[in-house]
Amino acid sequence: MDIALEKLQQQIENMVQLTPQEWAAFRDCWKLLSFKRQEYLVREGQTERYLYFVVEGIQRLYFLNDGNEICLGFSFDHSFSGVYDSFVSQTPSQYYLQAITPSKLLALSYTDLEQLYATYPIFERWGRLFNQYFLLGRVKRERDMMSMTAEERYVRLMTESPRTLQLIPHKYLASYLGMSAETFSRVRKRLSKS
Amino acid sequence: MDIALEKLQQQIENMVQLTPQEWAAFRDCWKLLSFKRQEYLVREGQTERYLYFVVEGIQRLYFLNDGNEICLGFSFDHSFSGVYDSFVSQTPSQYYLQAITPSKLLALSYTDLEQLYATYPIFERWGRLFNQYFLLGRVKRERDMMSMTAEERYVRLMTESPRTLQLIPHKYLASYLGMSAETFSRVRKRLSKS
DNA sequence: GTTATTTCTTGACTTAGGTCAAGAGTGCTT
DNA sequence: AAGCACTCTTGACCTAAGTCAAGAAATAAC
Image (cartoon, rainbow over all chains, first blue to last red; front, side, top):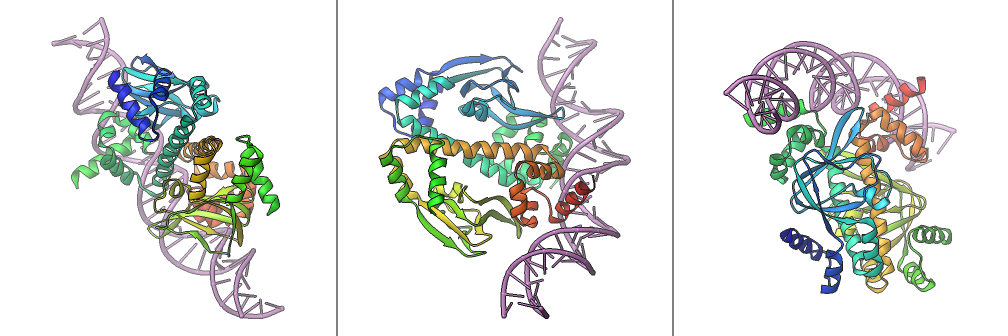
């Protein structure tokens, strides 16, 4: 967990320069939570209370559409996690956030973050840049989903994030890439032959 | 244009409370730009210099994919506009922003906005909330695009934003909704009969 | 107001990807 | 280590939506 805190500090200071006091205040807001395999961090209808930073384990974000699960993303390692739209708007989540493997995550509550914003202006800047970073990712994904075929999206994932391909069960990846599990399997077969 | 400035002020103060001095500093950064029909505000490869607030006219944001134009959004009236990802990251745009009709827009340059951020902390908060607002819109759209059929997306646009349906040429709307112009036409026909 | 250009519609045909169903691996569990 | 439950693969078939092409309707330009 000390390593995780270091990684967290790196990520923050990548965006803003904190004084030791500011960092201490920030660090002290995070608490460690543990989840079992298959356990839910947030269910549909619940309001997300935390922003997470993954210490260990893998999580997936998905929603239900006519009984089908559609994945929107995955988190692991030293990345942020959470149902972020529910978190920032403090409205009920339309998504499920589930631990795929046993997980430990650092968690920052909404009220603590509001407190940081109110106390140290530097965190407003961090929040702006964090939202911006998040936004750029979504814009990129939107473009990919609107312009690429299923096979092209698979190839992109394979080249840009081979780690995800390796860590995440295929049935989840398929829906993340906007295709059925069968199509996912066929795409892989087609590519392995050529 | 005075009305536009009032609308701009309303939008800002919807998110943060400004002192008269802060508002004056903010207001003075915006300049009025005019564009003819079909004129480009930004082309692919250019870096977006401004965040815009539409005074009048209609604009569309699109990109080219194998020679096909795919629309990502439209702006009109008193909404914000711009190639926002290029603007915030100050990297070359992958998108075109074009005036569909003759347009007048208030424009805030990147350097002026940076100056505001540096001078008045309140604008960091505004920037955070602005990015957040933007992000929530993209997350919603991503969900819609991944879970709805072409017809369902059309119905959603019709009910949530009839104004867009009325103002924007169908061929642009079709690509915005992720379908061909022909499918768009057929969906409308099908719905008009039932 | 009359051309000239776009935009929109419609029909015929194609295709990427989905669905259903049945087997083959894989790996938890006791 | 045997059994059970997932996950992945494969085949057969289906369907939503795309493409191509040709008119009709609407706008823009002169």
